[in-house]
Length: 244
Picture (cartoon, rainbow, N blue to C red):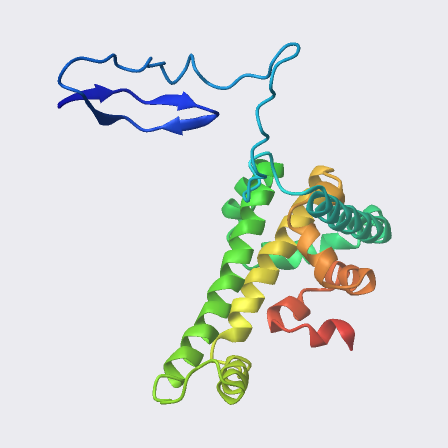
């Protein structure tokens, strides 16, 4: 008996791995070896036995299903409509110059050189950066509550997935912490600054990155009150001043 190395090849529509094959000592021929690229099963042009279809893939190689794409599109459409309604409702306040007082309050909290430089170089790209920074501040606040709740639950001996542990964890996260109002005030202050600067530069509110989260989180009446106020609401750092 002698051993002969057989290259990988297709046989009956299946890929055969490279292997060693034993042949009789008296001779014998090695089976025809076809390369992997040239021997892939092809769809017959006319007649002949057709290749069996492959089973459906479990992963979405060509993208997510159509119903998921449609759901995301509908969500984005509703968000754009809500932002457009809030922008149209607040446009009168911008045209009447009611936001000038709010912009003046913001300018008084920083140096005149800093405010002039920010106003002179303002654009849609800087508005997106300002909105991203405000969201990061809110994320840090949420992460602080999550960390405090996790540390408080370390001494529990029972599994954390029990209903009482889940309730305790969520209850601890809802407790106000020192500095929460300052975090919220800083985030809302950045968003308010971005909206005021976009209004001064003539950028539509629908394209303002700082206006979009406000329109999605609050009602259009609350957003307008927030924009035309003298600045006491966002300094206080709470939403209660807008609804009262």
